[in-house]
Image 1 (cartoon, one colour):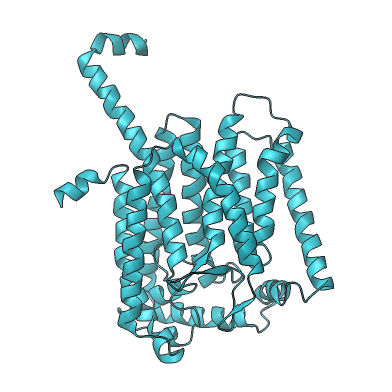
Image 2 (image 1 turned 90 degrees about the vertical axis):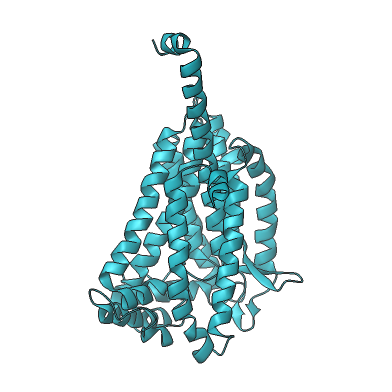
Length: 399
């Protein structure tokens, strides 16, 4: 155990929070998976638990491998990865509309192993790293909007356009995260407002196009509109049905909950082990359990900000914020949907919900954050060593 802990470098608090979230996830996933077994007729509860455990083990393998990569390597990897994710997104969008009756324009089937992979999750991580790299590159220059269109905004809009038809919520969140990172990176606000205007115009044109040619993107725009309308006026829809059952689960949980595995609404919520797992957690562990879970996500956010602030390079700061903040943002959106603060989005609860792609890409992002904190700790150790060996030189450098 000591050997393993010795090899886990980077921010120990982040390691601890991630490990606690992962360990806790076994309880709600095991409980909520009974919906898939007894209602849907898919597998066994033990089978789903073992699958979730395997996904987490592979996820922690991703964290460990990625956090050993020197931070500056991610600049080059993002340049290589961006064309790859564009090809994957294009293939995902074109490869079909259904897999076993479900919309499949978000996923691709991995040959031989039979695993589905949601390419938009990988694209989001790569795009945030690419954006951090570009902002670092222009940090000491006078930025002109025309110069940034091809190297920055063209790749951003290409990724968003390929994600949007099948996954509006992911595209919207990613767009907001890119804008936030550009703002923090010193990109002029007046140009960002132009990009916001262009994004809204593009969305309107897409909706009009989809309405004019409904056979191209069947049911997607209608689904978005119905979810927003049901959120505002309370009309019946599939999303409204899920929200109502989630609210019943939350109300029945009370302060301390009904106990682990004693949820009733997991048998009525279609996405009880993924999109609406937070409602099941509150039903079983009460308001205290729900607030405790939120606390750990906020603690993760705090440590991400600490790591970003301590990093000595602009790229390191932007990289940590760019890949770390979306994890917490997604978690808060998932919780907000469960309590009807947001319309139904389809966003999972990071490290808690079942699902391989979400877990792996969250682990990839955490690995990148830990890589940056590992580099910072190495620099601090080097500084302390120099201070002990050459105290006068260090003192003169400070002066």
